[in-house]
Every structure is written in structure tokens, then in C-alpha cells.
Length: 178
Image (cartoon, rainbow, N blue to C red):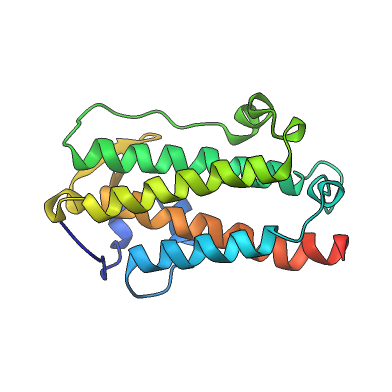
């Protein structure tokens, strides 16, 4: 079981679309990165009011509350993929349409602390999954959204995807709620 994961996936371990997330993950211990990122997102959300949680930086963009819900949905999907592949499941896994899923989460009707607490629970579960992951499971491959992907790549996409949205929070959301 890896206490830490210091390697990064090769470019043939995932679809090219995910490069934008993988490249945002710094070298180092993936477990530590997930934990530090959890703490960063929680600190960023702590001062945001309920009114602020309903802010979107442009028409048609998600609100802060919805982005946190989206992060929860996406982390669950990527973690499930990593679990299935690491366990040798050969069944292809479907993609998911983030825009179609979001309204069904009804995140806009939930208090921000509840949405953030759900994300934190999912992140803590992801950290536990990685800590208990058999080392040989990291290299196993599967197919998701019609593309081959390794367990390690699916796990590395998680902090990369969150970092992508953390940057949007800092650049576009937080200045608007000042």
C-alpha cells in the first residue's frame, strides 16, 4: 500500500483532454497534496456568506455553491473509476455530463456549509482510498468515456480538476463578492 505516490501518470495513461488538469498537480506526495488542497478549499469557502455563495461571475456560469457541488460529483466519478480500475474491473465505464448532472444535485437549495461539508467528506474518502490503494493497483488500466486511463491518472485528475476551479475562484469569483 502506498503511503505516498510520488510518480505522475504518463501522457498515454489518459485522454489528452485531461492534460489540463494533470499538469496542475505539482510533483510530490499525492496524499499530502490532496490533504493540503482540502484545507485550502475549506479556508477559501469559510468566509463566504450565503448571498456570496449564490454569486456567478457571468450569466450562464455556475454559482460558487454549484461549483462546489460539481467538484463533489466529479471527485466521486474519478474516485469510482480509480477504484474500479485498481480492482481489475474490465467493464468500460461511461462518461458523465456535468451540465446535465448539476441541476439534479439541487446545490442551489442547500446552505453553503452543507455543500462544503459534503465535498469534504468525499475528499476525505478519496484520501483514505489512496492511502489504502495497493501499489500494483495504480498501474492498472480501464476504459472511461471511451478512453483508456490508469488508476493513477484517474486519481491525479482529482486534485488537478480542483486546482483548476480554485484558480477560477481566486480570479473570477472572489473579486466579485469582495
